[in-house]
Image 1 (cartoon, helix red, strand yellow):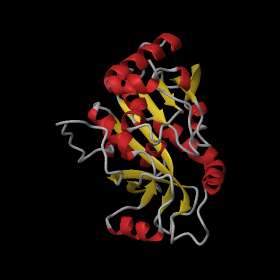
Image 2 (spheres, rainbow, N blue to C red):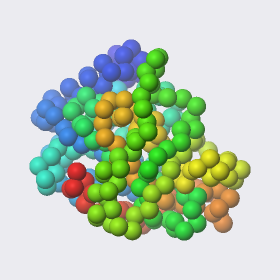
Image 3 (tube, one colour):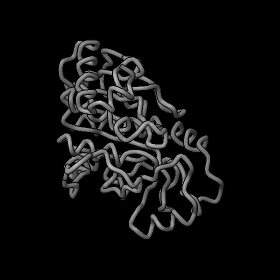
Image 4 (cartoon, one colour):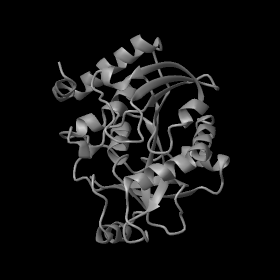
Length: 272
């Protein structure tokens, strides 16, 4: 059965199948926290503890190789310095890849099936606040889902009032009291937003814009996970930035900030 067939048959059965595969291949029956590491955040996996197993994502049921430069194609089991088990998902599927919402949130559902109670979700994004220069980490306090879809199907009603954990944001500020927070808006992509769309997003309350995170966070809440989100501003958004947008700019900003923000994230995870 192909990955697409597996997920389309029953997304929760697919997650259970993937979790069982990960447990068998890593030798770790249960994980505690899952990390989705976006552009610029990858080095955090090496700082939170010792990697005890690394899997090629495309070999795990339901997963595929990443389609975006800057994302790694592995799933790692890490023993943190605090004795917890972290599942590091380096193979994020974006909505614009056309594989369907189930594929987008398969990693999150797999993490939940693997026992994870906490999801740490990160991204590189565009900033609407001119005070946030490229390289600025910003806590996600809420989101606006502009994808016109949801990972939840049928009469599945989930309260998202406190989706992004205020408790963990408080822990993050113990590590760095200067951290700002903002509302993240997920567009579908893969094109960047127009200046008019950025003004629209700003008027409806967005501070950050990107092409991931919101759908994953919704699925995590549905699975009962506590969600912590943090963005890296890699560029000012369209119409705010004085230069044209490019993915290379995102990559370069992530690389420049990687060591600093990865250390920050590792220190936050140590407090969980």
